Every structure is written in structure tokens, then in C-alpha cells.
Length: 256
Image (cartoon, rainbow, N blue to C red; front, top):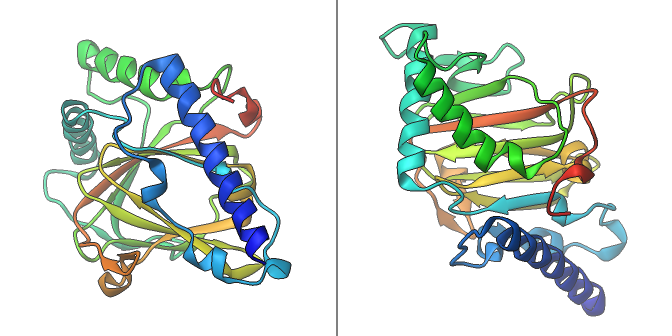
């Protein structure tokens, strides 16, 4: 059992380090901290090896500090402006999603960020091309999805993003406040891990993690923990990118 866990750990860190080294080489990113500090694999490492489902932990890819504070402020400002144009000036959160997955939230899709400011549109598009789309090649994307969760009471129940209408990659940008995402295997909920998503990070769920794990953000503030530390649930915005169902396979990631 010990040798299996050691192999699991070494595979996890080798895969992730090679991904980050490649990304640093291609994009000259400065990553001051190890990505391993954002993952809690305790529950996976504690269950018996003969009941661990087959999957690759490297199918969850995290880029901490991917966006500067200035870029985060810029995206947050225009996300809130977009939500205001869609829902009006008064902030009223929806208590529950139609499928009872998301609670105390606002959301919309983005085809245009502004009501006609071409300069701002271009600035946002340039930022997203540089920081998101350029990580992939020849990939067709659905419209960007803005999801806003209310402070302390917003959350997402365990679910797998619709597999019929979007492809094998889900990309997220996290803004405003940190959050804890919990991922559980659909066939064995005891096989789970947590990720601390801090403002400015970008994450990618693909392939075995995309299809075989639910993901959630605990609605109960007391359950919003990472490595036994309670993480305050603040106001949060995420930008979600999904691949068009007939888009190309995720192996078109530039750094793989």
C-alpha cells in the first residue's frame, strides 16, 4: 500500500511539475509557490488502493496567480457591469437554480461585454486571448459564462457539468475571494480531493476529472474548509469557459 501511495504522489507531482515548467518556458510565467499547496489529497491517499477508481489527478490543472491584481479588478468591474445590464441596478440573487444545483447566485452568458464600447471589448478580448485562449489551439468555445455567488450563502451542490452540450474541457477564472472546490468520484464519493481556488487563479478540468468527478462549493459555511482550515465565504465571481461539443480534443493544449 505504501509503495502504491508513493507512486501516486510521485506521478502527481511529476506530471504537474512538467506542466508548469513547460508553461513557464512558453509564456515566461512567474510562479512563486508550488501548486501542490493548493491541493488536499488526504482522502484519496487514505482509501484502500483496490477501491481507487482509475483517473488522472493531472486532469485538474491549476495556475495560481495567473492574473495580476489589475487584471482581476478589470475583469471583476466589467463582469459586474454586465450583470447589472442583464439584471438591473438592484442586486437580487436567485435563491436556487432551475436544477437545484446553484444557490444564491446571479449568472449570464457573454456575447458582448459592453453596450457598444469597442475599445473595452477589445481590451477584454485581448486579455482573455493572452491568458486563456492562447493556452489551447484550434479549440471552439461556447460563450463565456459569468457566475456570481453571494457572500456567505452562495454555493454549488455536487454535479458534473453538462456532458451533452459541452466538450471535455472546463476552464475557470476565479475573482474577488478564495473558495474551496471539492471533487468526488461519481462511482465512489469517498474518493475525493479539495482544491483551494484563490482570486486570480485559472483552473482546468479535463477528461477523467471532467467526466468522472462531481465538483461543488459547499453551501454551508461550516463545511467550507481546506485542510481543516475554515475559509470564509466571500462574494465571488467566476468566469467559466466550455468547449463546443464538436470542438477539438484537449490534447491540443499547447503545454502538453
